[in-house]
Amino acid sequence: MGGYVKKTDRRRYEDRSFSVRAVHRDQVDLHKLAEVLIRLTLQETGRSRADRRAAEPPETYRDPATPTRAAASVAGPLVE
Image (cartoon, rainbow, N blue to C red; front, side, top):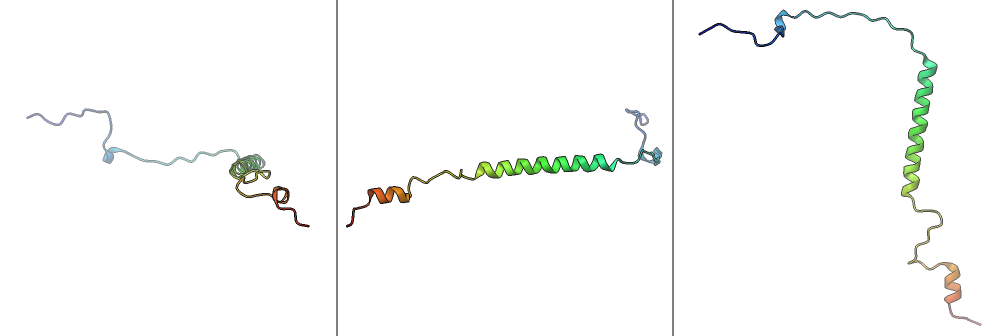
């Protein structure tokens, strides 16, 4: 039988060397970061508020099963 033949160009784990390199970046613009966070928060708040309002019945909704006061007084017997 023949010897081992590599099928890929990958190196074995033992042959690899790892290193860490520091990348210096500009200072963070905290004003822009704060503005983005505020906008995202307001957007999310508006979306959740709209979802809550859509789930609530409208204020003018009246359940047809319950009689209203005006309908009860008109349909009620006349007592003298």
